[in-house]
Image (cartoon, rainbow, N blue to C red; front, side):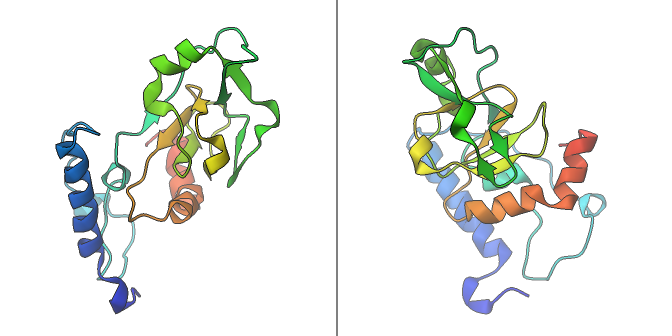
Length: 177
């Protein structure tokens, strides 16, 4: 049960909506097409009355994006790029990170990492999901890795646990997300 001092899911959703509207008004993000309302058929199980069912994108500042389509030649002085082999369950292993030309990374500027966002494998080795540490600010991601920039009210690690849950992983492996 939700603690009353934390507010309700609806109140949190309204705060997230206000944050997104402020980002749209300042031109930092584009207005998104509205998602379909969640119906009774969409709800897989009951949650406490103070919670609210929302779609993942409703918790994000921007659309969920995948990265560089074709990495090309290695550039030792270039930008580091996370691939699905680097993103594991709840952590990132930077030992074998590839590098690409700076100009190529700039073509995919929407997925240049800032630190604090979430990366999740969406092709190849599915299921790897982690919060990007601040030390990886400036890295980019390959096509098989998606970037989730959650709204400020959402604790990134909580969202990672949700994405690693059996419930979400089942949908991911079935290709339903």
